[in-house]
Image (cartoon, rainbow, N blue to C red; front, top):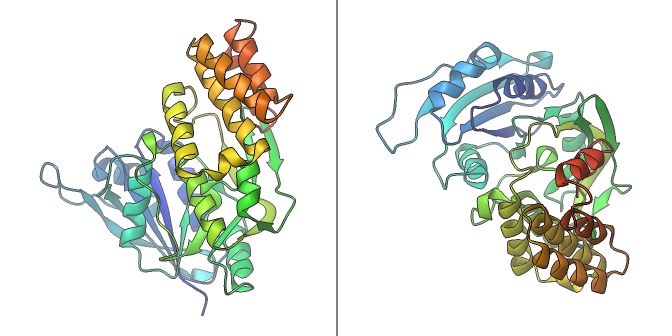
Length: 327
């Protein structure tokens, strides 16, 4: 019998169209095992989210919860490929407010063999689930699998491949490896949890991947089986939150500062974020640290250009996003 899979889909209820598309992509997977989807409403009533997805997942809102309590919608069963069992339920975030707490709420209510994540603005492509479950089955000692992605920004779609079938802790220290994206995560239940101390949820997925890879190299299916949509991210432009998240990562993972290439990348990102906030002195300080770690670090040079008013941060991100890259 194929392993059962639970899929956690966090949402703030502000992207009903992409959320419905995300659920459709999950439910349409050609996978013979049971799939249970938990949509976690973060900061909004579960009844609202249930109404948004009712046409897709047959989820109906339950009674309103008492103030301060988690509200929960009923569950509905739908037919999937090959008439495999598919169920969907909508419930409120029962843990810390924000993305990490929403993910952990979903994990905590699932009893499936495997757990997967899908963000509410991303899309699983055909074959994603079957390919990852098969890859994980080939390595009994492994507990975590990812896949390559296709970045969608505007009218462009750019594949991002890792170039490897195993993602190690060193890979993730030297580079963020953006293709190891939260919407590609599939892991054995009980293998890991999301750290809810991540500031405003920043870098919770990178932290999770680093911890998973430290335990065992991540099995990676290097085909773009998830479409990551960058046009509606909640995080772009939240420069102060991004600074806090990067500083949290440096404190939590000292190895990042010990690897010159990885350190330069993080320092360059910090320089860029400070420059975007108009903090020229801090941008210069972090740029210098980036150049010291890795002479010629491009992020530091771009940060100095932003700090000097030569280009706007929005223009930089737009140019990078069109090629499937971030800062």
